[in-house]
Image 1 (tube, rainbow, N blue to C red):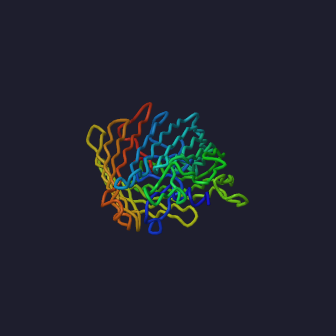
Image 2: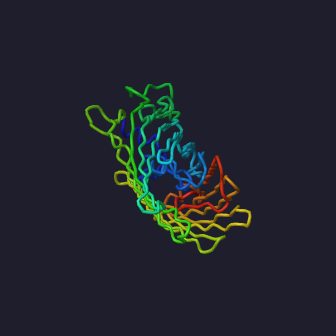
Image 3: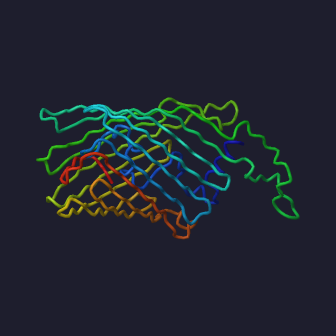
Length: 332
């Protein structure tokens, strides 16, 4: 019973059977939040000593109390091979204040896989805690129905929750390949990551039911094509799976640079059978500001009255920043 109630709590809409359920929080500007995409991206960025990333996503804006997700991460290069990071994400949804909060420490280690040191393989591990909670007092049950006035909060629901919150230990790992050869105009990159590998139990499951946090797999890759000194284009693909829920996305973005090294970034992402995302970014010196808008292509568009979701991102690199510095790693 509790498991069913929690499921209703998270979505709170009447067309659940038409939707692909979302378990972990996710973003449309996936590349702009690298430590969520893959812990092996810890320390993988253009020349500089450290990086700060932040994202905010308002999802299902046409539905009352839709998903609101914020995240911030920081990572730095401790040595030439070792990188460390911190990743925090918070999500709210539903009239019963469902909250998903997670905090991780990340560790990255890189090695060269070519004789000239320009082709690199990076490994990453993350460990941390996930806290999930909800406000049981805001839930409504059929036992609280009064035929004269409808819902009556003075009637006891008869439902007792052993817990309305939980904290579990969580872990994940990943691997990432990229090319930093300045003489190569076509740079391949790609990686894979796996999350919730320690099998932490789900305290919201029915008594006697052995339910664990489902494993999430991320696979991503692409090619950065430097068509000229001031123009590059990057097509890439992303596949995410958690139980039977999946995201299949094809993405392409182009960057047009000015002579002073600043640039405009334009892109589009197609989450197949879900949404089309328009992307815009402005790269000024050490800062990249991103803006995107989701346009629903699934049956969810009926519930949202055609309203999509907006997302903002910020990436800042601390330390030196050569104007023409670039590697094959995703950055917007």
